[in-house]
Picture (cartoon, one colour):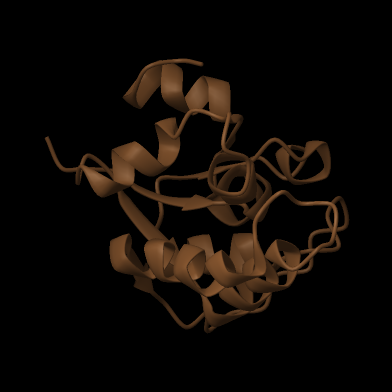
Length: 137
C-alpha cells in the first residue's frame, strides 16, 4: 500500500507541536514515514506566524526548531493553481493539497471542513484521519 499524502492544517500542527500536553499522533505518523506530508511556502509562513502568538506556551527559542521539525518530514510544494473557496478565506491549504496531489487535508477548522470535495480534495478532522491511519486521540 502506498503511503498517503496529507496536508496538515496549521491548527493541527500547532495543536500537536506547541502544546506539551497534546499527543503527537499526526506528527508521529509523519515522523515514522507512515504518511507523506506536503506543505507550501505560504503554509510554512502561516505556521511560523502562529507559533509567535503570545498566548502559545512555546518559548520563543523553540519556534524555529518547531518549524524545522515540520520541514524535516515534509515535502515543500509550490501551488500552481489558485482556489477560491467561498467557505474558507484561507485557501492556501487547498492549493497546497492540489499541488501535492494529496489524499486529504487534515483540519479541525469547520470552515475548511465545509470545503470537503472542493477541487477534489477530501478534508478530514484530526480524529477521522487518525481513526483511519493511526491511533485516534
